[in-house]
Length: 394
Image: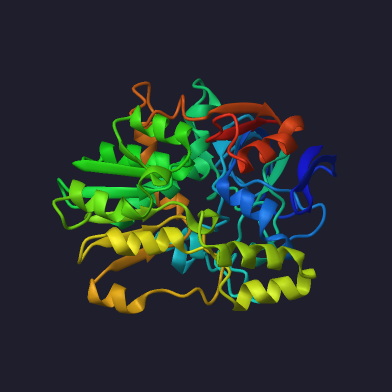
């Protein structure tokens, strides 16, 4: 089969690799019909190479059609259409029963002290072959795949793999009070969807911050009050306080993470890490703060006293400095973590109707053959051609 594989920093290729096979009696083989390119994939493209191996298959946002099932699979059958969550959870352990599928005790990566394994990610999360491929082996066939109805195009459902549950959890964790205000930092796919979900859930004021003109225009078209970071610069906190009765928003979602346009020191740390031999770079990233903290620092500054910060952006450094004195003084509540996909499926599925209240049908900006994935990665990394969400067709 054809699959997108990692070969080094900014070097991904479409290779011919062996087809996956049934290994366990509850495995399922899915023919991938649509698979997404995620901002987290850029961490692999740019920063997290020390935790990858040459030839690793990338991608964690797939959906498709079941082609083969193991002898103990009863929940899905060949020909059925399914979405595959990005976190690999058994659905039956203690953590899964708590709705914490991202902490699944069956697939935790104990070697690195990490939570549930992920499709198409690093050694830190199991190094499981991913979904930017023609075929995907899916474990836990009775509990992990999300069956979806035939008929509507893939765009209606594919975002159940990551974007929708990640954004839903971010808004849930933000805990915006009825009639309250929310600022979303970063209007990439997750941040954009956060603004739509927050409005759907009756937040009275939704403010979006970014520096990419196309992303600002896109969010504004959905009723978001947008602010250009380049335009307002250091005055941004004051501008936001002026919009929120002088005290700041009730909640802030940081949807940027370590892709933030931060300090020169943070950028240098990223560059230095990428130049080190892989074992040394891995140890540095595990033990040293290498993130660009600008977005999180901004969130701490602008949120009102007693407010909530919800982190959906990925941070990777182990000793990143945080302004604990300010956080304590302001009584800030901080919630974060990988999305627990299955926890939110029953909330989200009823919204994926003909009415399409979240605008999923038009959410993708680019539909690209898998054969053109390397160029799409470069385009997305450089924020070219208005790329916000790219979907591959294997």
